[in-house]
Length: 130
Figure (cartoon, one colour):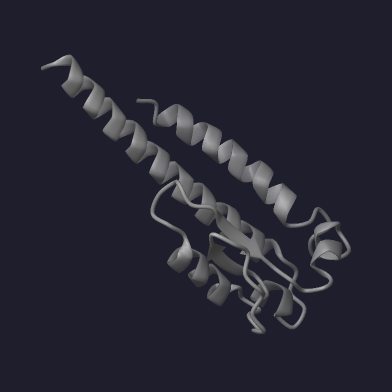
């Protein structure tokens, strides 16, 4: 086996691991944020929207279970790294919810899930060393 072949294989493994970890982290973070969002008539959970390249306006949908918003995450999240994926919610009270205004989510939704997913990513990186 040649040195250049070794480098090519290393590159393939590194890119593949990076793509898997990026997609998994995005899916897990966005799903966690959506499901941690307090439910009041389903507007807050339904207000989350996933987009690539630029934030999108929140849809006007009732989604108490969060299933439509979570399905959109899976559908719109790219297979690999290299594109910026956004989770947006334009409801006027979403920041108050993040800051703990609801007894259903006193720690908010985004920060606590970012901390959780960061630990997951650290573990995935250690497991996927190439």
